[in-house]
Image (tube, rainbow, N blue to C red; front, side, top):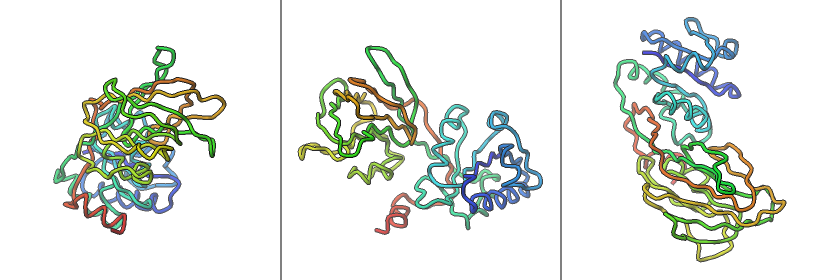
Length: 281
């Protein structure tokens, strides 16, 4: 088995955990790869340091060490190469990560094949301007449309399969997956949904209309967000933390992707246990 380890280089604990994980995996007979620019910060005997494009085609499992942001960063590469991801959490919450740093010894089960794959849906989206597609990508957590100007609202209309769902003004809207329900969505008052469910979540951000409420839609729906006049306000599309500037009357079309991200599970912790632990409920 070949494991590609991707630690968050900005976290000292991540580098230390990466070294321990590498040593354990090597002792179990695995081939361990890391990016060549991590040779100094995560130096471990026996690890092969290669450019990213040289690692992924050879990889069986991606091991991320950091927070959920580290998993999101690797998700696009994992999707392209159809590689499952196992996360070790050295961040704050880490809903998607399977292990904590003290549980690194459980990586033995991965080498032994004693794990299961948990599929998570993704969202394909595209930006349509003047009838032409100018940008498209895929998100694991969410695609957020919001203004960057404090105190400046934007007007938008949401459609589901071409039928108006609601129209309102506010700070923006989150179109998310169940995986992303515990991220920005829950902070904005959206529902918490089991991450293995397959739904599209529509959550307005600070809507200036008491009648507008978050909605949970079937994965088979096509959601369209149609912007009104933006003017000089900065309005951005942010898929999983990225950024793309939008313009007057842009349409953003979103649908369930045919791609799935598989997260590696080696424990029997349920989603509800994780909720209690992370949210303190």
